[in-house]
Amino acid sequence: MRTIKDVRFQLKQWGDFWARQEEGTGYSSKSNVQAIKEACQVGCASSSDLHLFSHRADSIFVPAHIEVIDHDLERLSPRCITALRQRYVTKGRILYFSDKETFLFWVKKAERELL
Image (cartoon, rainbow, N blue to C red):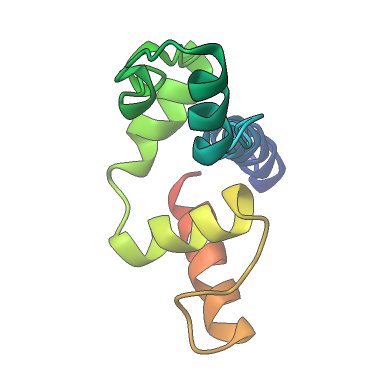
């Protein structure tokens, strides 16, 4: 039998995983102007469109236990899913709810439905 503590532990793992996946890749080591300047100084020009495409999303490996939680979340209402994402992925920043009490209501409702 699952307890609310088990559900919260699994949601924390799920949130940590997706938070890591949503992190940016950082900034380029050179600006566009710097790259053009260096190409002009060297005397050769090269063109690449690799920076326009991100193949990272297609190659994400989602562990089985995270997929199970993703599947369980599909049966929840959109408000519950939003509350869980804010609680566990974005670490509690209240963005789409009027106040903290409303936010906590939806989080607790979602956690109970996952029991």
